[in-house]
Length: 478
Image 1 (cartoon, rainbow, N blue to C red):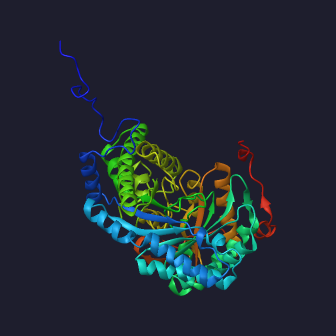
Image 2 (image 1 turned 90 degrees about the horizontal axis):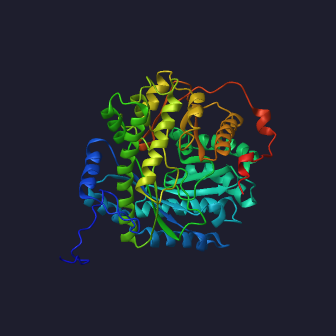
Image 3 (image 1 turned 30 degrees about the vertical axis):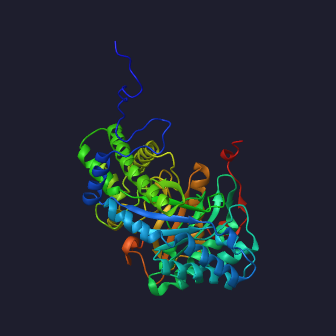
């Protein structure tokens, strides 16, 4: 009887897309790759962004000029080959990659001690260097003030409106709340004023500055999506993070499933999200290998675009809701969000950012249609944010909306994030010179924003009280 040797033993078959537990990352099956590329050609699947996170902690200096020179040199050194590398990978794999972005250490930390002009100089340095490198957006004109703010934090916050008016690529995000710290209502009130001032400073461009400004609860350190992208202080010196898209792919899968029950629908979405995430990780690892830097995370978020079928709203409607905003919309969104997370978590061990379903009004053709049909209100949209990945995103309200009302909207969304221990944000646009029913036309990925009605009842006294809303009991987890 022949004795089996190590070389003569047949290997145990491995299912496509899976590998032995001790091997990472999992091997990529050629059929899996071809199927995913088909999704890019037919169902609008893309990689929404490859974002290079860059630490600027080693660029801090008391001299504004010296700090700006160090920042420009660091960006050129770290990201000089980013665009060319991403372009080559896009061509090799036939996978559309919509944006090449950079996120940096919150500038309130880098520019600590600077005056207003110093922060504006940093913003202009980021913008100028990004243009030279062919970068679409830079995130990180940011501050973390959930529990309190330093003089430098306040100075950066007070310079946001002018910084966003002066620049094209710079994005700003301020974290004003967390589940551990509660809600800094002084910062919330100030951000209501800043949002209003940013709208006025860019009123000649449809108040577009507000499309580059987000107010956060539980802001992640590794988010590749703007306007909330920033590079947390616990991150590597340079790291590649990838944000995927794919509502059109999910929509096609749901339509193909026909009249299946909701459990089957969840399984269908989960399996589709798995395939999409695998492609995102493949691209991210290729970029990191070729740049010689760390691979960070894949953000699983379903990020819609103004294309008709590339819409989270259309997925919800395909599940059986006549128009998004109707009763049942929140439950359908919860199913979608959970299934996307489960499928993505199976596909990658390095999931981060916000990861789930985005519901930005202006960037989603189905959301725009629902607003204009009267199906989707601001209040219903807020309720839906309790079960999705982010908050009130790309929402336009009348131009005469007061700073206090904007702050109250922010406070409500921060409360949802704090209590549910999840990331929420507000990207709201008080459209100067526009009224309910008008449209803001941004173009590109920013899309079209219908101006939505907002309650005429006020919360001024509540906002003016200031102070800090304490963290809820859920924060006591130690």
